Amino acid sequence: MIFALEQEKGNFKSRVFGGFNRHDVIDYIEGLARERNDLLRDNQNLRGKIEALEERLDAAQEQAEPDESARDIAAKALEETRGILEDVRRQYDGVCGDLNINVSQAAHELGVVNAKLSALQDTLKTAGERLDAVSERLQSAGETENAEDL
Image (tube, rainbow, N blue to C red):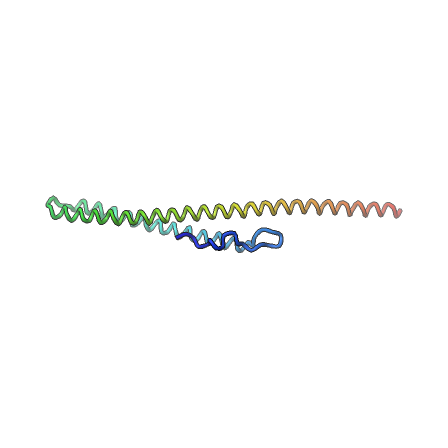
């Protein structure tokens, strides 16, 4: 049940000044959040099944009578319950593993986006400094020209 955004991984539309299309990033994050919520819901359902099976197991053990047939019935119920519990445990472990993978993928993608946004911020700062320098040169050139006219 791994979140199906593999094909979208790193395929955000670029903006004019670099970076990513904000809506693509938001859609990606919202998709990861939905998948996380689905996995958490599955996890909660599986925990409920485990509790129900444990209660069933406890009830079967309490109802076991000392005669041989009751013991056989209880033993069969116990084995059946253990098998079901093992299946539920495997499903639970799978859900937990999928959730960890999705969390890791999301953290990686957000790290990449953060690095690119930081680089964009540095580039914009440098461009602002260049614009300030050009503005100062233009202003100095204008003042020099006015002084020569006098």
